[in-house]
Amino acid sequence: MTPELARLLFDSLLETLWMVGVAGFFGTLAGLPLGVLLVVTDRGGLIRSVAVNRVLGAVANAVRSTPFIILMVAIIPFTRWIAGTSIGTTAAIVPLSIAAAPFIARLVEAALREVDRGLIEALLAMGATPWQVVRKALLPEALPGIVAALTVTAVSLVGHSAMAGAVGGGGLGDLGIRYGYQRFLPEVMAAVVVVLIVLVQLLQSLGDRLARRLSHR
Image (cartoon, rainbow, N blue to C red; front, side, top):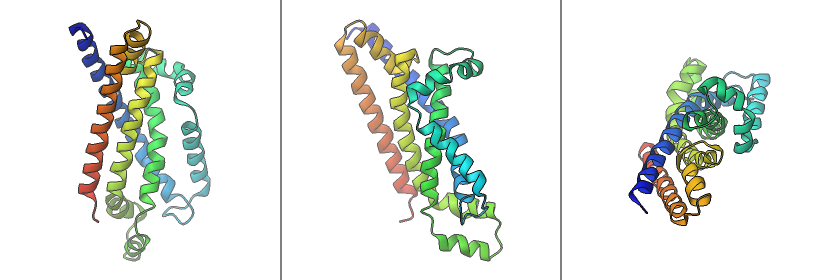
């Protein structure tokens, strides 16, 4: 591989990290409270509201069930309105964030449901408010599971970011398509695949290690 292609590979890696990092941040910003709401508004929840729970669940399921490539195309007008363009790494962050939010919400919901019900009932018996229970018990106890959920999301976003490259989203996927496929440079495609594998392994290893350190078990 020439120095020019090596530089392009490095730049593309930075673009992928930027997309995954920013999309993960905004996805967590929306997905974490959504996951909490899905738990507390469910039957037997701290703030029971079946109607709200069903609406939130339906929205989360609708976005999750939409293939990412279709989601990207479907929200192009919204992406252009937010980012000012529908092409490039900045534009790709919009659909990546939207795809990440319900994914995180469902994983956070599963982690919160693993918290010991006896602990919640004990806090309620001592006069704690629902949101105090969320802050003092649910979130701290579920933190290892939440970290594991965010790790899975980050790995998923790496794959989605590569897919975004097929429609001009930038990053490693774009490099693989433009140089590895369209210009018939198999060494570039191989390098992109290797970098993606290493990136995923690093993210998974770091996430697993952090989750283990936070676990009380």
